[in-house]
Image (tube, rainbow, N blue to C red; front, side, top):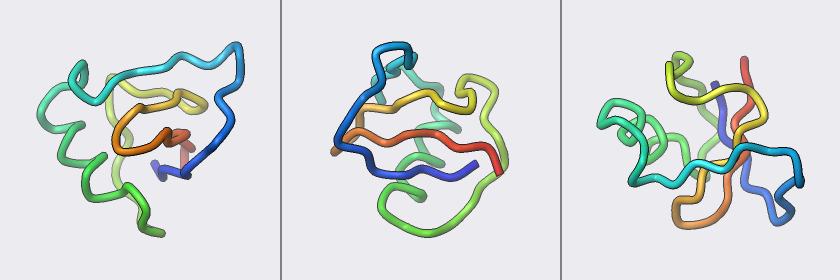
Length: 62
């Protein structure tokens, strides 16, 4: 998965707050936020979900 910073949250997107994610997924979000890297898919995030971390980040499947 990749994270892409987004300023617009689609009305049909599932928004997940960082604190709601399991520890493994939180680590991945911290590592991917703002960086052009990929990580294995997380069980609790799907393509198109938005994570509220330091900004809003859209989850994209690889």
